Length: 92
Image 1: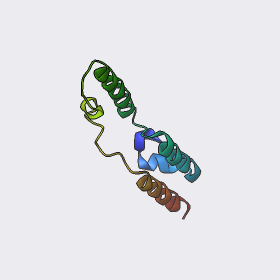
Image 2: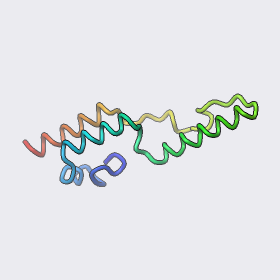
Image 3: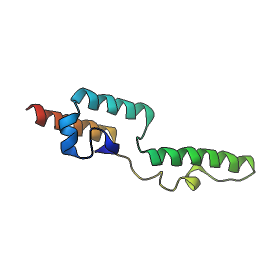
Image 4: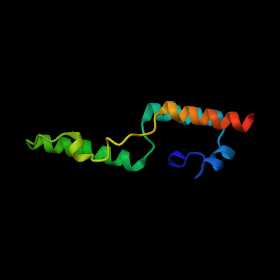
């Protein structure tokens, strides 16, 4: 599952995660961003590196220090649809 939410597999998440919990995770990601720890660390270091570079007269951009940042994250709409489908199957 997405970053370990609900379990390591979709089947495990179906058994463990309720629809309400899934919606709470979707809302959390909408407000806070990715749950990918590596990407969050990369972004924080890239911001700091960009600021240091600029303070020293450089012209680097955020993307120069975050090579993986442009990789697409799953869209929240897709995640919400997945959780909805999981719950409908489980309850239906």
